[in-house]
Length: 345
Picture 1 (cartoon, one colour):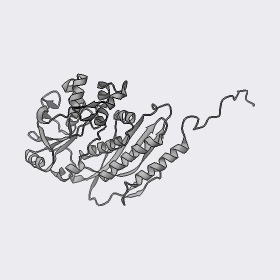
Picture 2: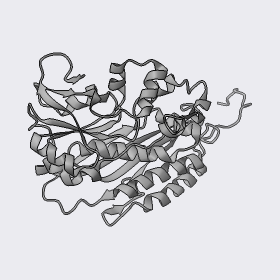
Picture 3: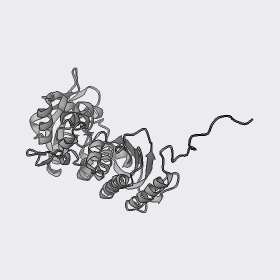
Picture 4: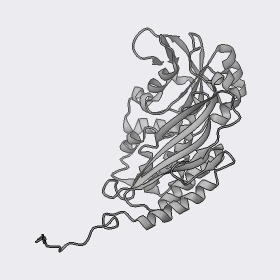
């Protein structure tokens, strides 16, 4: 039966819907070049429907995985056109997460999605990912690049990372041996790392006036944008030789001290942390003063200059303080009586 419907509109295709397949293929070809610089003999195949990685030279290996994102720090990177830095952020963030179990990183995969694939933007992101993977001895073995018109805001993107590492079962750090009297050591962060950016953007009104990112602050010694894009610091090489003397590790990310330290504590224990035991970097002081942010809120949102917390016996802590550059004592383990399991005073 002949249709009476008028065909006065153009024929539909993936291209008219906003997805340029040829451009996507070109972008993926560029990505393959970056991936190749991170691979070694353990990588048996990349580019099919799945990537192959040969796990060898372990007696009783335990795989440890992490999946995370960079959060709204991505918006600052996009506004400034400095998209390589967030590639370092997500790799280093995931490395720190698996380090808390005593694991060393093996391979990494990424997910990048945006409104329309911008070849320059994607190339910068992947270049940052590949650079971070090379620096940390990690194979960038694959990922996904998604073009999603009408879903993402033009010029912005999402970046998610997936990391797998390994640790011998006998060396897993699980916090079970933590007890009252153990010492908490801190390791300095490089800044905000990848958390608290929604609050920082609000405090400086960056969404309304992105020019704030170019503003120079004497107390920072650089512009606000440069400070906020300082990459997340990885700790695995610093701590690797000392992992056998560590009972627990807490990566201070979203949720600050209150949200992260209890994750490694056995039931019935709490952490007593002295706020004045380390020097809080100027960026956190600036955020608090400009935004009028309550001190308790600052410690719930930000790392406040301490990116990793180490828990060890008193004897081990004394040795760790000598062996690990810039480690400092921030508190001790106490019995949990009531309320929060992190006591900040």
